[in-house]
Image (cartoon, rainbow, N blue to C red):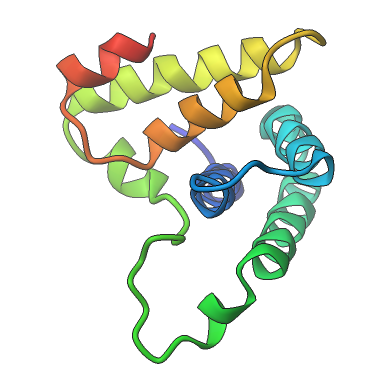
Length: 135
């Protein structure tokens, strides 16, 4: 089980990736995502600070979402708490994807967009069999 600040950081990473799903992210955003992945194993304070930075980046990319009178949820943070307490097979598959994300992030030559695609899957409501295709 993850700690609350780790769940919040995972959710913020998913939320930020959702903001760039229809465009090509800039280097600043990709670097921030990679830094956020590194801090999943960081201290509580570092994870909280990174979550705030990810939310600030999300606000920069989609500023109108915060004041939208009819929020669609498209750019919402992921809900890792629900994943942990939901279907055990889905949790296992998403945990495996998350471990894959962490391993790829530590490879300097890994593809940033591949990391983003995997993070995106953590926020999708998919069955375990479908999720295993990404592992």
